[in-house]
View 1 (cartoon, helix red, strand yellow):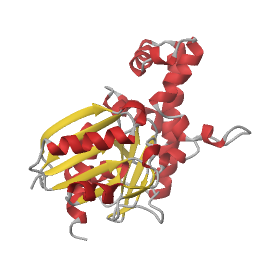
View 2 (tube, rainbow, N blue to C red):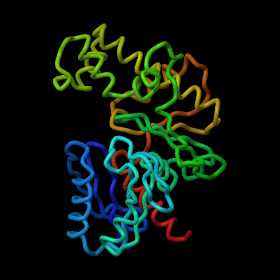
View 3 (tube, helix red, strand yellow):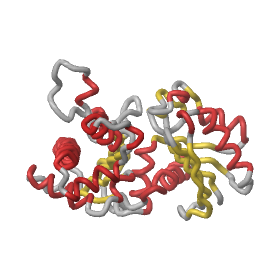
Length: 291
């Protein structure tokens, strides 16, 4: 069996062909200009046209999605997909069976299927990207919630709200690389587009006072969220995914900050890296065929 898999993000679309064992047979990535849903749909169809051997379509998407109907209530950073029946649209266009699942849930399912959580009954996945995503696996099952919104860790408060805008106190606006870049841009009086995460972490490694302060706050806010989640769900492990987790020493630095909290929960890097969304989407596709 060959399955066309897509991991849809706000700035990039990952495309692949996988088999029923989760093996990646082909893979490609393309940029998404201006968060364009139209561009994404056109790219999905173009990839499928060049891989006509595929028998089904599996998608990993941001936002709130019904995993059984593929209806997207809110598309996260892709607001073109708000209120969009993506599964039905693609089935009508292609005649192929289609499955759609939330991206953080897909990352978790990849870890459960072929990663380091194959024997775990209770674990969490936290993804650190444009925002903070999350997924829950409790008592041997993926927890989706009443409105398919469980695991939205990014909306956890990283500090007690003051009189300002509520969202400014959440993990989404305090624990991402985009936030680090914006803060450094303001402090250094440089255009945001000239500031990179690599530069900030290099400054942190070199002892630059501004970078040390910003990165330390970033880690502390992340650890505050992990602390709350660990006490709420008592997981065997919290897996961390996203490009920033590939930084050498990232997990050790997180553990060092968590030590202050006295937590006994394990923290580990997600094992599938950039292919987690594709792999988890295919796992959901295979299981949804038996529902």
